[in-house]
Amino acid sequence: MKYGLIADPHANYEALSVAVSHLIEQEVHEFLCMGDIVGYNASPVQVIELLQEVGAVCINGNHDRYLLGQPPEEVGPEKVYVVEWTRRQLGDVEMDFLRALPTQREHAEGILMVHGSPQDMDEYLLTKEAIQKAVRYLGQNHPATQVCFFGHSHIPMIIGEGRIEMNFQETRTVRLNRMRSYLINVGSVGQPRDKCRKTSFGIFDSEAYTISIIRLDYDVEAERARIIEAGIDRRLANRLLHGV
Ligand SMILES: [Fe+2]
Image 1 (tube, protein in one colour):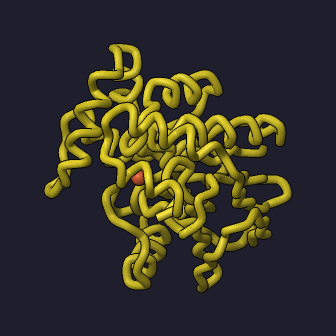
Image 2: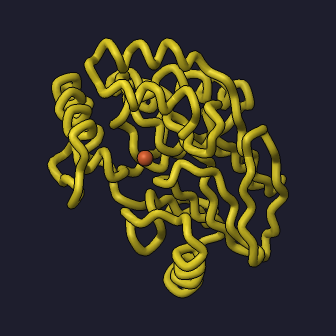
């Protein structure tokens, strides 16, 4: 099976449409989305429609839960504006779609889908301590999991075999070991933060046992124009230029 992996699309239709077209060309059998479907960018309806069109198996992220009425403890004014603007765009169909999503999901072939980390949906797997804790938690609580896909940090990363592999600013395929388990973030489709503006997504091939993290250019200016037209904070539009 070839799985098309999408995390943190964040209402960026220009980026998601490039990622989905590529994944269709590569003949993936199924799309998995690790949450944060909305927030930050300005195409929430188109992004939900495209995920529905390809039948993506989705979980929710903190931005989706915020939209549904579960705000985080601290929230900046720019995020308040985006969530209120997004609510005005979505109809019942889109709201129902988001409401139906679980916060994590055990999928076929030993795949676990989470947004933040296996033990905490809002945790960022960025520090060595958090990562070590997550590896231990996964081993103890999800022994059948072979590959746990996560998002939230927007930084592509492969954790496994006692090391953390980063630096995926160009497309790269990594062979995995079937005897080991992994935590993998394929980066963010809609708001990359590894100082590379290219959209970031992935393919997990469960037969070849490889993971590809794919980086492609997309029309950043078109998405920026939508953000600015929507009255969303320009800083969110400008982040897309620099991948931060
Ligand atoms: Fe996110």
